[in-house]
Image (cartoon, rainbow, N blue to C red):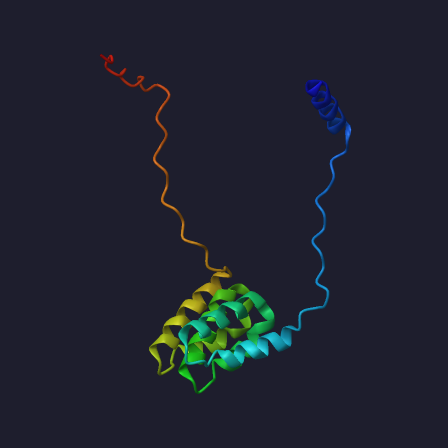
Length: 157
């Protein structure tokens, strides 16, 4: 009886048209991008490195909408804020092209971290790409099919 029920279900499932995946739900309210960017820009000067870097990563996720405020942050008197702004612009990549002139000016900053991250950001903006995760080393090649079979185990006594 179970086999008959399974066969009927398979037959019915084969005749049903494929359903497209459901659309993702739209956000209930549009994200207040300006408010988010403004709050994150304020946090770039935080004394805690983790807070600054998390704010920079969040700003890079916002994308092109965060470029102009980040250009302004590159002029901050706080070197930590300038460093985080340069980092965020580098994470944005190609869409941060309007910040190229500000990043070139940042290459002459007094702070070495600002200079280092500005140079890295320029490279990423010019290449137009976001940073890619580190690649895994290649796997060992498979054993060729022509390889002889492994030697048999000795007989068990």
